[in-house]
Image 1 (cartoon, rainbow, N blue to C red):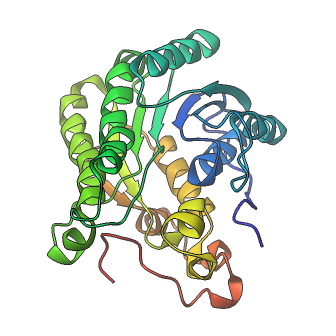
Image 2 (cartoon, one colour):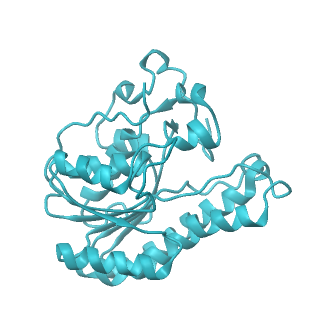
Length: 287
């Protein structure tokens, strides 16, 4: 079973013609969100570094563009390093020029290293801060003029704030970088409220079967304790179709939001259906 397999159902066409700008959209959760929105006929900007195939990780901006097209969406694959201001600025401008505007920015690109301060080299800390906190600031800062025109959405994939020492002690460098995204989002929700832009965060209730689980922080056995990326894609879709800034400022959990929208059965999200009752709760969340 591959973590790249995605099963999606038809949407409501609420995003037809809308332009969704997704960082890190060539793999994992970003790819799943892209394909979910594509079913509505949305324009999907895949802003990611992966233009060439990776020996271990499947998916490039071009392969996902083909999947988006097949699903009914309109893709725009752009090779972008979210740490580079000129590249992000150029990508946003090209997206707006191509599609006539930008309706949502999804800050999905991320870097993870679950180590203590003593065991985290400064270069690794800098990478996490630059790809997580700084990139969200940079992308959001540059996207605000476009989103003001559409009263759009800014969605960042970061956890609800939790200062419990049991979460901070083992890997505070990573926690700093992710909580920075959340604090920025909370502030932006207030700053941009009058402009009609909805800003919120989204985090999975359980582990999600991505390359980070399989190669970076876990192993294939942890995949059996995970849900498929589509649980986050379905939750992100609910965010994007929400109106009247109803979710502004919220620190959302995928399962909680989906239950609010009427979903009761989550068994189809299990990566391994035979172990759907053995899912592991994700980082920063209480059991």
